[in-house]
Amino acid sequence: MYLAQGSIGELVSAGVSKEGVIRAWKTGFLAGTLASGTVDPGDGKPRSAYDNLVRRVSDCDAHAQVYSAVWDAMGYNTLIIAGSGHADMLVQIEGHWFKPGAGSFLRVDLNGSLKKGAKIIFQPTYGQIK
Image (cartoon, rainbow, N blue to C red; front, side):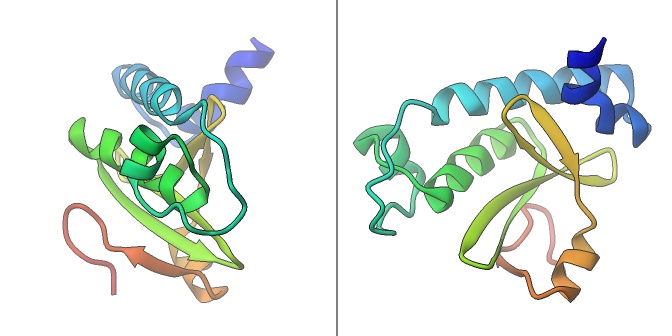
C-alpha cells in the first residue's frame, strides 16, 4: 500500500478515475522505459527525442521531449516547462496537471509555477496557456 500511495497517490487524491489512473500509469511506464538507458554528456546539447531515442544521449530537455511524444501519442495534453536551468514535461490528466517520473505523479500548480518564474517552452498539445 505504501508503494501504491507513493506511485499513484496524487492521482487518486486529485479524483482521477480508476480507469484514468491505470491508463496514466501504463503510459508513464512506457515513456519511462523508452527514455531510460541514456547517458547525459553534461554539455547541454541533447535537445530532442531523437537525441534520446536514437543517439542515446539525453538531459532534461531530451527526456521531456520523449515523455511529451509518448503522452501526446496516447491522446493526452502535454506541455514542457522550464525554470532554473531545468525542463520538465507536464501532462494534463482529467483536468489536473502532473509531472510524471520515476514511477510516480506529482501534481503541479501550473499557474503558481508560472508566477514563480517558470516559462512554458512548448505550448500544450491542445491550445495555449497565456
